[in-house]
Amino acid sequence: VDAAMKVGQGDFSTRTRLDRVGGELGQLARSFDEMAQSLEKKELDRRQAEEKIKQSEEKLKEAHRIARLGDWELDLIHNTLRWSDGVYELFEINPAEFGASYEAFLYAVHPDDREKVNHAYTESVKTRTPYEITHRLRMTDGRIKWVNEICRTEYDPQGHPIKSFGIVQDITDLKQAQEEREKLIAELQQAMSDVKVLSGMLPICASCKKIRDDKGYWNRIEAYIGKHSNAQFSHGICPECARKLYPELYEKS
Image (cartoon, helix red, strand yellow):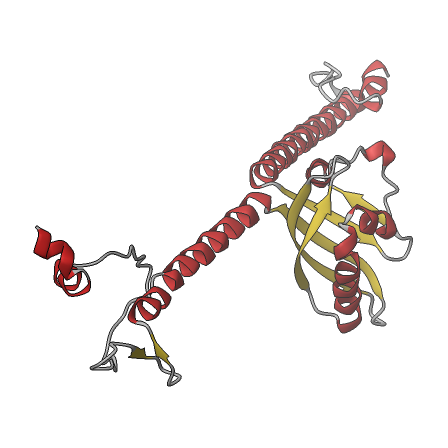
């Protein structure tokens, strides 16, 4: 009786110690011990399975943390939203202060991106196709984060949407790197456009030495070169011209 009570309380290691007794009592004791042993093994297997699940969940959480990932699930029947710890960390929201609804999620999205995100999701549900979108979050202190989101929806046999599942990843560093790269490319292109090279046949007047541009206008040579290169001019007089313009100075010398 004591053994049966202990087994009933979950102590499956209990034995009757009457397995060597003969007769009907001994047979019942052996059957009871075999049952207790079987239950003990099943309980051990259950605990081991639970431990493996726990370890797997911990590894998944760590992987999500390293990759800055989070997952969410939206119950479309009751409009209840479940976020993983990673999503709360990414959005920097206290679970106790979150409304856990689709509207609460939209409120966390950057105001300029809310319409785009809402349209992408509703169209995905309507057309029964998964979607992927990149959008911004605005933190309470004004900081901007960029996230990439992937979502799919499940439907009942009648085709009604019942649940949406998604993952969201923080790509702020990647986005900043892309923007910096685009900025550097633009600066390089601007620098290249500022480097002007004269080449080809240039029509020049044999008398006044003006140069004709590609629109047919004649320009003083220094004006033309200055327009088509980064060269700058300082004006002076060469000795030959000085003798022609100021012969009296050279005669005195």
